[in-house]
Length: 120
Image (cartoon, rainbow, N blue to C red):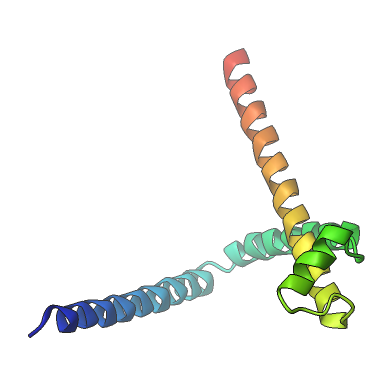
């Protein structure tokens, strides 16, 4: 066999193993949720909190392009006046704002836990 065939075999094998790992991870989480339904409440609360943070970020995201953004979109052959460009721009802005909010929460939590550990 040539080297390229071995690489193809390795790539296909790794894709299959990643698929098996994904199925196993989802399956084990479902089995754990069935055996301990109280964990579903905590997970749903976390997902709900993330959705609320995203909605806050989405509502704060701008809907109009600046001059440099419109120029970049035109250079990429994307119509800046199209409705889909505005929707995507707002979704990306919401995701970026959500990421910023979550990073700030993580840093504040890290500082709080460090200071509280020093005080004790």
